[in-house]
Length: 245
Image (cartoon, rainbow, N blue to C red; front, side, top):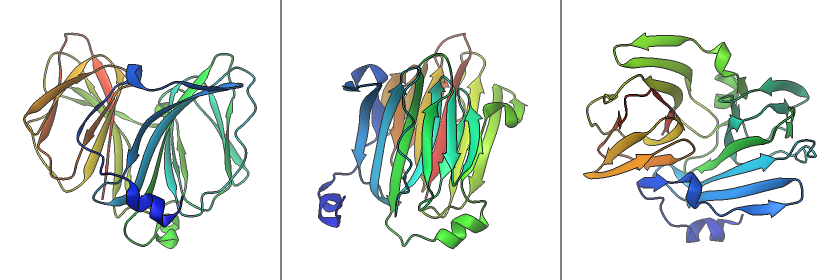
């Protein structure tokens, strides 16, 4: 995408992006769902989409992003991820933190459809590849390699908290609320934040307006917006939370 095209993009506003509302685009052995595209206080480009690969689908064409970083999240199925010749199999809630300029491909490695989210972004500040390498480079993380830490309202799994080629800080975790309780009091921070629902039902208060979400839905919170999430049923709810600056 050219710089002129980036300049035409509008800021992504706080709110809800529901799985059931996404346009479905079929293309041979896969289906895509555009979710959002725009800019944010720290990113001159931010785009999210979901892809479903059918059983036996051809792997995505191996390629490298010159100046785009990605987070890939497995929604369901098994994914074979290959980055610079190194492969790993990720299951549901597996995460890839992919640096720019690295050859990679994605393949359905299971016997059921594979669905995953891809978050693509380019920072307003100059890309720092060396910073990303020093912080660990690209990561491929399965949920079962993370540690569940109980809390008074459920528990948390930390995936990473580090700098990357595009972000001074990129932090990602999964929260479980085991009953009808808030995660915390409403608060604000300089980082923009996304909540991706895994299971259950929640309500999110963002700058005085309440939204509700279920599995596959996204909440987006702009930098410095006041927000707070709560479980709205007596059944457990689980969600990804990630924020950046």
